[in-house]
Image 1 (cartoon, rainbow, N blue to C red):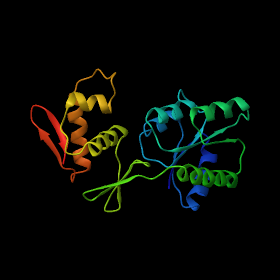
Image 2: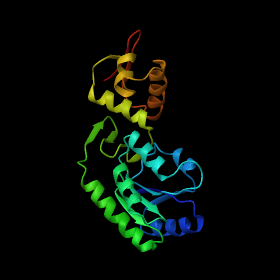
Image 3: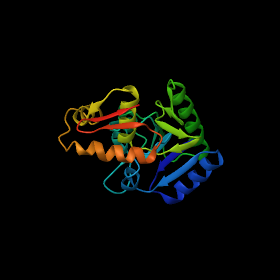
Image 4: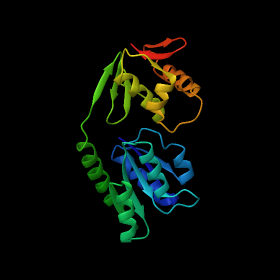
Length: 218
């Protein structure tokens, strides 16, 4: 499984990364909220977020961004302040667990295993097979001959829209409404840009262009 660990204490983060790697987790460390925010749309099984980070973006900002992007990742909050308010805020924002500093690496490993087991056992996996793609809707993962394909959140939402409406033609404005929402006021050409990127990453998709109208998935 893939873990993103956000911690600005470099000595601590390196120790934890080694422990997680020994347990078989693919672990990436970010030392600031700003650095982590650049990867907020990545497909990840678990984020471990320190609440108090140096810089302008803290752990609360990161979990809010994850939830706004409909992330399916589990979240563990950590903080040097062992206060009920931190725990309550973390749970209200959607974290799966809270761990106060200082904590031992073994304790964190136990929490990680427990959260991942509980989080993914609570989800019903919905898998769609299309051409040579295996699309796990629950985990928002796509595999092509066993290899993972990395899509942004909007690319995945566009793909999901087409899969749910196969063989039906939609104009750009209708696609905008379903993928970007009613309150989007930008150009409908954003659909063309996103579709171009999706076709590049998933060339086996049979998306037909209906000139002067829009697109449909065959």
